[in-house]
Length: 252
Image 1 (cartoon, rainbow, N blue to C red):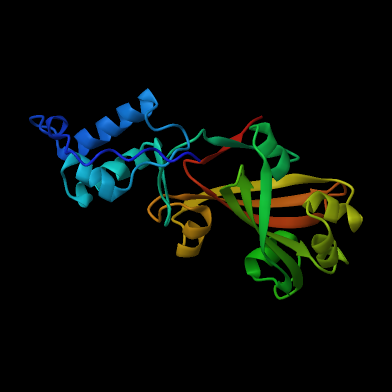
Image 2 (image 1 turned 60 degrees about the horizontal axis):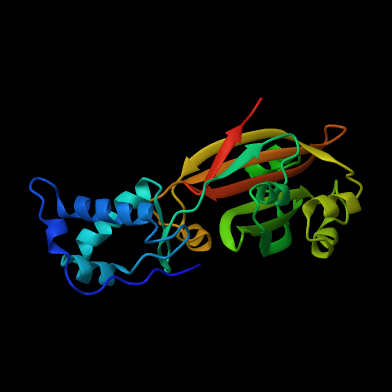
């Protein structure tokens, strides 16, 4: 991403002295205009709070308030520990019978990639067991992965598979990058989305760091149940997606 040149240190006081308009709103308006004019390109990094503070001749709290407003409007995204960026296009995640991560990202002309956070056999809690149709405490294989679009994090998903029903799934997931290929290796030729539930909540500190998002922005949380052609459950997945970077779309 291209980092925008920092403004010079000369306070732009005339911009900040309009009667009846708070300083942070004037700063937000000026930054919005600069983004619209292309001074700060899409995906580009904005100057730091300290640089903007010097440029506008105000304290950092005032600058932070302006950036928070731009973030709420979706014009700017704040990444934990990295700074503020001009927001790119929103990725629409369409819920379809065959929803696949790779196809979703490539539909937006972006390159998909992922990082495995954990892959292990574990015991199912009540939520996981209920969705997989097994007893609580039964053995499941957990694959948790961080997904990227053009190197930018767009979701963290925990995939659960019934270990007894899908013998060899742990090794298959170690061998194959794509879940579709791993399932095919253990005899699941095709699978379909049976249920999708969507809720929202604030991210944990770990989720915010992984997804490079502020703690005060909501996550979209999806719970997905996938079944094979015979209607047997083969996967339960919990996905977490940052707003407003990702929108979930249901189409008839």
